[in-house]
Image (cartoon, rainbow, N blue to C red; front, side, top):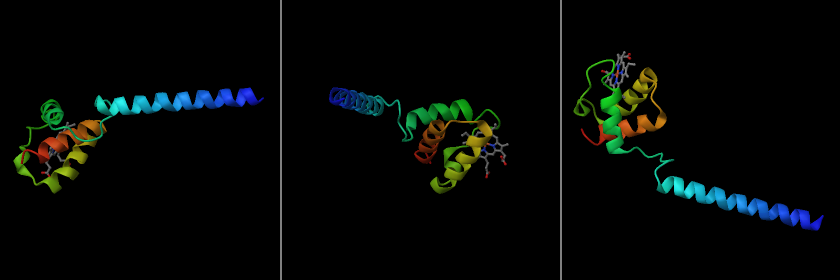
Amino acid sequence: MKSISRHKITILSALSLVLTVAATSGVAGGIKSKEGDFSRGAQAWVDNCSRCHNPRDPKEFRDDLWRPIVYHMRVRGGLTGQQTRDILKFLQGSN
Ligand code: HEC
């Protein structure tokens, strides 16, 4: 019995090591990035924000107004959370 529980502990610590490494490298590689990214946002803006109407100039609205607008347009356009954050970063960084 003793050797089994020690075996379990070894598996658990190996597993948590793998998870830690995966999480760390994910962030470093930008795979799981949560922060908005300006240049990705610029591309996503071009790709998505002129689908239904003329693209709206970033200078048209202040930072605090872009936030609710982009979240509204996220629903309209079916954007992912990451695309939404990227576009918001781009708009707020360009006005
Ligand atoms: C699926 C179509 C669609 C997509 C994609 C879309 N929009 Fe819109 N947008 C609309 C519609 C419809 C309106 C009219 C207002 C409403 O929805 O009630 C609008 C209105 C707006 C307005 C005017 C809001 C105001 O208060 O004057 C802005 C600014 C805007 N969109 C920006 C964007 C941006 C930025 C994106 C990209 C993230 C985007 N839109 C993507 C359909 C879309």
